[in-house]
Length: 538
Image 1 (tube, rainbow, N blue to C red):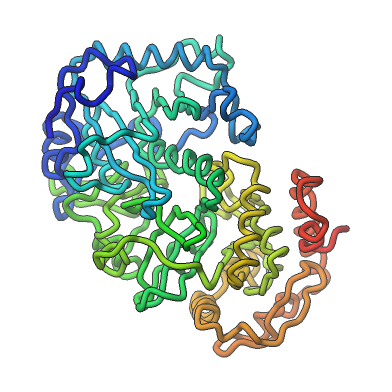
Image 2: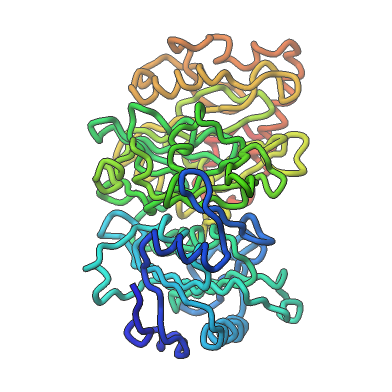
């Protein structure tokens, strides 16, 4: 679709020099434009392969939010949400607009939606100078019907000017020439100096994390699935390396979404119209849904491929370990959207927090009260191990609030209070599942057997564990099932799996102390009941 810019209201943004805008092009046209522009090549089964340049991942230290009157009192200021003066935003915004007004390359636009629940969906508009970036957002957001474009007015706009750099960053006290800046009052963001597509995806995610809680909707970094009849919804929270994608992918449980959801008074809904999956070491036997989704319309980023044949070596991480593919959600056959239905469900029956405890001291599963759920949600604990990120050679404790701290715009306590309220109102059951180590710490013990973890997940989802007898873990203050069919009873008692129980006791105390040390960030902003729901304080 080729339209004149004056019909789209771009002049209100100061963009007056663009005569034609390539708006919501078909996937065939986007692929053609990408190849003709020299931005990418055709790969296996007709997919498109692109490189994102210098940045092969998000640049969190270059993300800023304008300190302005309409939003400043709502925001969780600090290292996640860095303040920037409005005058600096205005100067960089002018630079971005001048680029669009004077650059003779094509301008691409995507108009669509974020959020499958029409009561809370927002209209998103994204401008880009690269066809593949338009292809990326076409995959990731909810694509409109033609008639929905008539009179379309954006609720939030991102102007991507990845070729524009901020040479004066030191004068402004900024991190680098790259910038990702949000102005919540103007419902506008600008991107410069990075081509990485994930900045646009997570940018809108951050915007929803700001907007939706103000409307009483809990925004969540999680995956979700349902029974084959569309009921018994489950939510899976988990950071990288915990098994969130693997364990929420179930041939008998259609997928609602793999990354971003909201929980309203009516139930849960996916924010996105696509998936953005890691492809490093991708194997068709282990992850057939992702592998089969890599076809025409899918967009591969930063993979190593044979230039003669186009075949991809998914095991080659020489460019980056963060190789990825984006594709429309309906490319997953066993998804609610792939079955022709909106990606929504009723209130979840089950909430699962996944953690990878590399110290081998947490039980494989524990039942959580609403207060315990709030504590562990605020904590967002996991341990990164070798292979998760470059440079990590031994376990590294990570506490990422709400299992997605980089995207939290309000104080994490705001989201935790909303979670606690939802749990009490709906009676949803919450579980902590450890997919990390047993029989000792990383380097001594072994990873939790995947078949036993799957057995635990299946028992949780079938509600077989609701009334099971439990014991109280004296250090971590957790209620652990005494026995689970198909799961070793010894596994359920981590201390009994260690040869050196004194060493277990020391490591358990160490981790409990780390929990307490991290939670001091939130003291005074949570109730004593929530504070007391964590590990025993030393």
